[in-house]
Structures are given as C-alpha cells and as structure tokens.
Image (cartoon, rainbow, N blue to C red; front, side, top):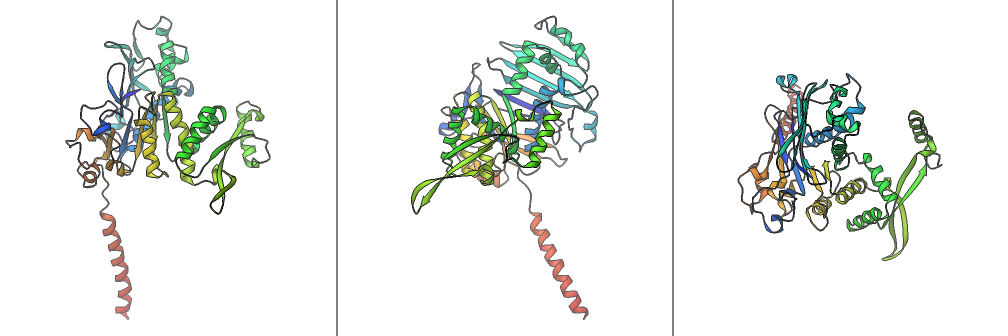
Amino acid sequence: MLIEFSVGNFRSFYTPMTLSLLASKLRERGALDHAPIISTIHRWPLLRSTGVLGPNASGKSNLIKALGYMRFLVLESATGFQLGESTRVERFALKKEARTQPAFFQIVFLDEEGVQYRYGFELDEKQIHSEWLYRTRKREARLFIREGQTFEISSRFAKEERGLEKLTRPNALFLSVLAQFNSPLGGRLLQWFRKNLGVVSGIDDERYLPFTLQRMSEDRSFHRKMVTLLKLADIGIRDVRIESLTVRDTSVPEDMQRFFEFLAQRDGMEVDEITLRRAKMAHTVFSRTSPVGEIEFDLTEESAGTQKFFALLGPVIDTLERGSVLAVDEFDARLHPMLTRELIRLFNSPETNPHNAQLIFATHDVSLLGEILLRRDQIWFTEKTRFGETELYSLAEIKERKDASFLKNYLLGRYGAVPYIGGLRAFVEQELQDATEKEVRPAEAA
C-alpha cells in the first residue's frame, strides 16, 4: 500500500511536492467518514483512492509520469542501462538553477507483510547523486545510504550483499543491483514495484489491452468478472469471446505478419511462438421488440469509449484482486462520467475492494466535486505558478466546511487550480473587429 510519493525538479515540478494517501482527521459526511479508508496493521488510516484535478498543463499528467519514471528506473537501471547511458530523467526546464540540481524522487509504502519502507534517490541525466532506503517496524532504521559512489550499508545485509556496491554503475540504482544479484530484500522490494505499482495512461489503452485480453483468455474467473462489469455498464455487450491466433493466420494482415516476423527474428524466437488475441463482443439482435439471436462485433468496431473502458477494466480488476496500487492518467478520457464514478466506487467500497487496493487518478471532471463521492483529503489540485512550476495541494489543507458546495466554490476560484480563459473571447472579438474594418476601408476608398 502506498503512503506517500514525492517528486522535485522533474518536468513541471521544481520545488519537491508530496502526494499523501494518509487520511486526515477531518470529519466527513455520512459513509465518506469511514468507507474510503483502509485501517492498516499500524492503525494508520490510508485512502483507497485519490483524484488530482487542475487545468490543462498544470502538472496532473507529470505527477503520474513521475511515479511511472521512478518505477521504470527501479526495474530497468541495473540491466537496461549501459555504462554512460542517459538515465532519461527530464529536469525542470524553466529555472536556470534546476540545471545544476538533481531531480528528487521518494516513496513511502507498506510491503505485503505490512512493513514500512522509505526509499528515494536524486539524479541527473548522467548519474545517481544519492540514494537511500529506510525500514520501519517499531522505529525507522537505515538500511543503506549512498552519496555518489560512496555507500554506507547496514549490517542487516549479508556480507555478500554488502559487496555489491562495487558492481553498481554511476547510472544504476543500488536497489536494482541488489535485486539483480538475488538479494532477498532487494528482490522483494523490486517485486513490489513490478507487481504492486501499476501506471497507465487513459488515452493510450492499446498498451494495456494485450494484458486484458491475456487475462481473459487464461483466467475464467477474470473473464466472468469482465463480462459482468461490461453488462452492468449498460453498453449493449452481452458476452465476450477471446480469439487466439497465430501470426500465420489468414485473417492477420500481411504487413502485420511481416512486423511480427521481424520481432521474432530480432528476439531469437520462432514466429509460431507468438500468440495474437482479439476480442469479439456479442450483442443481442432484435425482431421488433423481441430478442432473436446474437451478432458479434470485433472490439475495433465498438465506440472509442467502449474500447477504452474494456481495456482499462483489465488493470482495474487485476489491481482489485491483488490489493495493489494503480495510477491512471487521463482517467476520464472517452468515458461517460457515470462510468468513471462507478470505477471510483469500486475502489472506495470495502465490499468491492476487500484487499485494500488503491487508485490514483488524474482527471478534468470537476463535477466529481459536486457529489458525495470523495472526501476532502481524496481531492488534490495542481496549479502552475507564474514561474511555470507545479504546486500540488489537497482540499483538506484549505479551511472549508464539510457540507460546503465544493464544485461551486471551485468554479468560483476559491481553491485555485482553475484555467484562466477570459482572454479567448476578447481575442475573437478583436479579430471580428479587424475583419470588419478591412471590409469597410476599400468601400471608403472607392
């Protein structure tokens, strides 16, 4: 479970900002006072979901990208980078001082056994400047700290593990190296990032569609849950059939066959080892008002919103089953607002989320503020300063009554994080005036 995530000097973030999933002590209305809260073994109240709102280009997506980048670096830096290769970090570009300062990432989480870890690092494009790992059982204990290529490693590590710092390249994380060389602790924490932290984009569903199709093909229980939720969404789908194809299948276009042949040759595989999957969606056929049968449509023939909802359900169900963390950018893109609300309710409810999964989502849907759906501490805002920096803050930090109209007050600008678009109409009016004057001038000259 995620407790908090911090980022600084990355993309639009300069000053370090922290997203916390620790529930506040504020009293909320009705069921919101307790339902969206996880009571951990440490009796810390953690939130099941949190939403990040703000205008375009305010930094919502960059927050999700920062979490994804940290996950990427932990999983890939030891094996995916060569000596001297760039770390691919993107530091804040609008401040001169940022060019001489490292980017900052830190995460605090509970592993599957309920043990708390605080892990973080600072880096630039060439090297890791510092790295640290702390563990808390009864009190926080340092496991290792790193400054450049100088390491201080706790005696809690075995002797052979304490020698691995010599094999750690300047652009690689020590935690990743520990996992690479089968350190029990390093491997366990790497698996937390791999299996318990998912980051997806709501406008790039083709990336996780194969995952959804594979789970439906291999797991009957997963398939049943998918179909049930699709029916409840009232989008006309009665059933789903997953077809598994070989690359040589006659229905696979020739250009796609050549592409997979290239991939197989590059990776040293046989092309027949590659399995392709596609979804066939069953719809009811009617004669007048009576059902008389079914017809199947390929998923690609469904609406863009249906395709996104179908693809996203895979990671959502998987996260709920595992009790893991899912961060979604552009959560509401191409989805009806009622569907996004139902997905949020799946996470907020202890009945549908018995394993204490957590959802972090970035959205433009400000109407969420007008419903009794999110606590004040579940609502976060991003706003740009006049220097182009992203500020991140929670509605719980603003003095406000629990029964206030959050939507109304947000639209009035009382919480900030609203776009200023008043200049658009003035621009159009000026353009119309200029056009009118150009038409009048030739007539006057004549």
